[in-house]
Length: 125
Image (cartoon, rainbow, N blue to C red; front, side, top):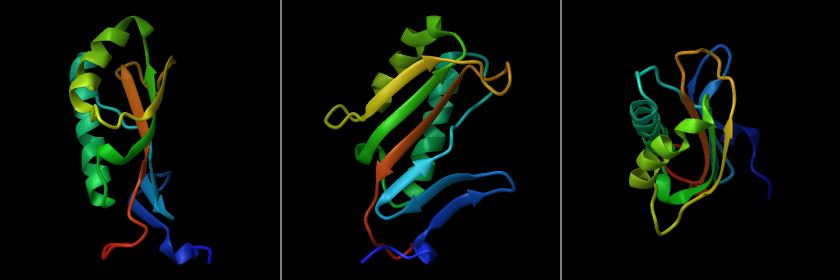
C-alpha cells in the first residue's frame, strides 16, 4: 500500500523551501550553508546542521545514502575532505558527488545536501 501524502513530514518549512522533507523511509535535506570564514569551518558547521536535521527526522549519518557537495573553488577539495573524513561513518559512507559551482552568495564556500534512509514509521512521523 502506498504512503499517503499525510505522511510527508517537512522539517523547518519556510516560505520558499523546507530544510528537510521525510517521506516513505527517505529523508532529503536542502543544501546547507554557513558563512564562517574558511571552507573547513563552513564544512564543520554545515555537517553539524545536517546532523541536527537527520536527528530531527529520526535518523543519523550512518543512514546517509547519498551526498552532493558544491564547492565555490574546487581547489579547496582537500580542505573540505579533511573535515568530511572526520565526520562520515567509515563503515557506511554514502555515494557522493562533489563539484565546483557558483553558490548563492560569495560568502558561501561549501554547500552540502544529503539523502538518508529513515525508519518507515516512528512516533514523530
